[in-house]
Length: 424
Image (tube, rainbow, N blue to C red; front, top):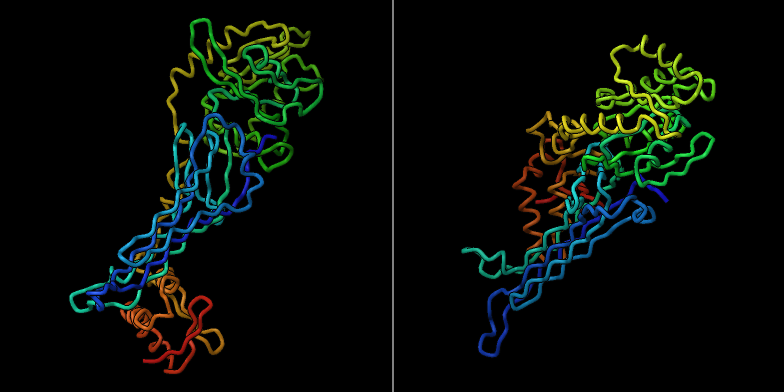
């Protein structure tokens, strides 16, 4: 099964918890703090494997979770970090943030890696909180939660030349003639349901990869028919070889066919529309070919047109030489613009407060990534940990902001699912 698009949830491993411990020996009954730190949680890493051709291995995984780091122990023993989770994906896999549609990574090179979700750092043991003024802290931290996100994976096949055209114009036949690929061929529409790749080798030892892409229909750019399934894979090609049934084997008008495809390509992507294009005038063995070719050249005098018969293997050498020569002049380029990547989002409000406070009924609700993380890592079973938590909130300006908004001592304040009393 060919799978080229899916959505999954990834949850990196939580950091190991820090330890609250004090050294105890027969001769040292009042030893100092010796609680170790927790280990780091597992990262979720996607790695390119050129041997893979589909995302089928991920199709049935609704969620990928990393392991928790090992907890710290007494006697200054730090917990071990968990092994990262490596997910293998084919070349040409793009990873998106499913919430905002931004590109997280475009993985095209064999062995290339990207950390999709970072594991949480280990919580600090009480030994780590020793200061000149606090020699025996009686608290430690829980491990930091691992990063959690929903991602979309999309495969765009890697090919130098993409064969495009309406169904049954001879794309699969052409690919079978010029390469070792064995695409399914039959006399009905939509024979090709998945991209077929073939390596083309010329007599001068040059070679390139050609893709027979699913046939287009009118409205494909809006998702009709095989729509985006074709257009997505065409994005990585360097040259578009537009195959046209110039012999009108099914009574179609070659000019109308060409304009239909161009309209869909232009509606889908300006980058795709601006790729180098070569017209492959197929079925030169049919009676209507010469008349149609003449009319086509009159309509498009600037187009590079190569007459062939894929069925009779005629005109193929000239076409392949032209494609190879054209590829020699085209440099690799990123199919995404800088603004498409999540890391390049421009934030307008750089001085935004690190938290927000809203009133929901009789409860003051505090939201903020830093505060919520601090909350999750605080051990509320340890009195000194609770005191530190309150001190941190005050230092961040939470107490001052609550008073400014009209909160009174004794009011209820909520962080995540925890409700506590606002007091000194």
